Image (cartoon, rainbow, N blue to C red):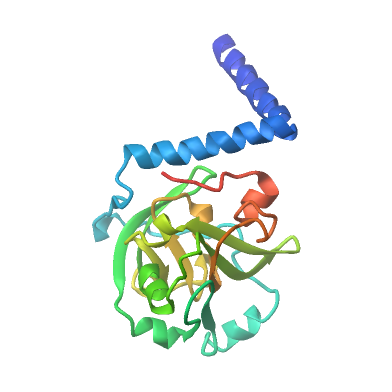
Length: 246
């Protein structure tokens, strides 16, 4: 028991120390450099296009819990829900040669990828689900991403604490074969709690990167002018790492 108490105290001191470091300019640069090292090391030690593990249908979790936003009430979302998302549009825009505006029917008619993968939440829980949708790479190729684009930003319909949810990845993860725009979970249309009608699946990253209630996919040259400039809602507000590779 004494050893546990010591470890708990040491852990608390470490976290407090990290917070103090993060509060300083030099500390912020240090943590930013550490994150870049984590991303570089992760990709150095693993194939950049290696697939995340996929599972048999028998491994699917009986319930795939919702997290974060589970029932958006802001903006036009309630109306779209009432209409069965008949008028929902997904835009592909930004630094692209041919912007797209796609209906759910457009997306369903594209070649589909189905994958059974594990969702790992930063809060410590996991679930396995079967996801179906077109690969993001297919949409990006159809739109013609311009050479100056370096990141892909995902815009969402949900608003938390006055800020619209968004996330982003670089082109490596955007073109990964398991990065899909999912519209089915376990063979059925996405439930509202899981991001209906569209959500991202970024299978090589933690759950907060998998943006829900997707409205737009935007190619940009820099993340500096997007949201708070850190690349995502939780990155801006809670200091989460932008690169959440697993």
